[in-house]
Image (tube, rainbow, N blue to C red; front, side):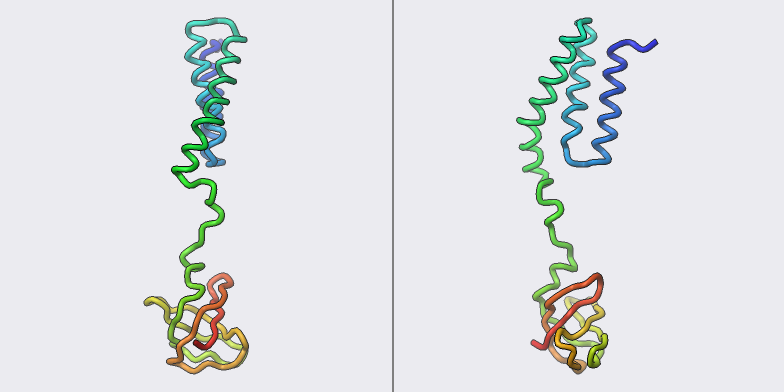
Length: 145
């Protein structure tokens, strides 16, 4: 039969696993609260005291510790960060393979060669300087510079 501290420990581990899946540093606050309740349960057998410790420690971490950690780990802007490919927008490059009218060619930018199309659908000759205006998956849209 499981003792109360073992139950709190299992709750803490389950919450920790859930945090690993969610990665928002939110559920781990409750996992730490469950660990605190497990520690208290070794000295106090009153379940209401354990629940109070669990709630107090969890809320303390949610409202006081989590904002500091999120700020330092930059978890808030996670979805807003640009990828390396998004950083290509606005850069200039050289057409390495001519772009036919309404077709695809290639452009060299910073040592990489990308599939591209002309923004206006007009042909662009090899060697021309172009500027990246848009990116769709791995295909860049360019216009003559």
